[in-house]
Length: 180
Picture 1 (cartoon, helix red, strand yellow):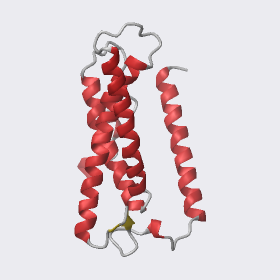
Picture 2: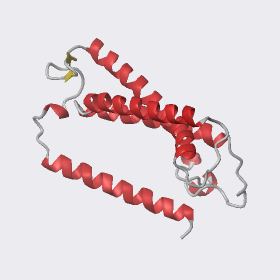
Picture 3: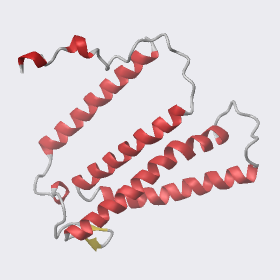
C-alpha cells in the first residue's frame, strides 16, 4: 500500500473512531450537566472567575484564541527543531547549538508547555463550546503553519496528477447553468 493510501485509510479510521466517540457520549451523557451549556452563564466558572456576561465570555474567547494559536505555532515550528536535535538518534553532530543551549531550550520549552497545558485543560473542559472553539482556532492556525513549512520545501514528485479530492469542474456537472 502506498503512502497516500495509508494516510487516507488512517484518516478514515480516525474519523470513524471520532464519530463513535461522539455518538457514545451523546447517547450516555447527562444533558443537565453544565458542560453542555453554551455562552456565558452563572454556572460557568473558570479558574475561580465567573464568566456570566458576554463581555467576560468574549475576553475568555480572545484569551483562548491567543493561547491556542501561539501553542500551535510553537508546537509545529519549535518542537520539531528541538526534537530533531535532541531525540533523533541518527543526528550525532549538532552544529546549530551548544550542548548547554539545547538543554536549556528543550527543558524550558517542555516546562512552559506543561504549565500551559494545565491551564488549557482547566479552561477547555469547562464547557463544550469553549473546547470546540479552542480546537477550531488551533486548526485554523495549523493551516497557516503547515503551509509555511511546506512552502520551504521543494517537491520533486511532479508525475502525479491532481490530488484525488480536486475534480475537473467540467466532469462534475453538478449544476447545468443553462437550465437555471
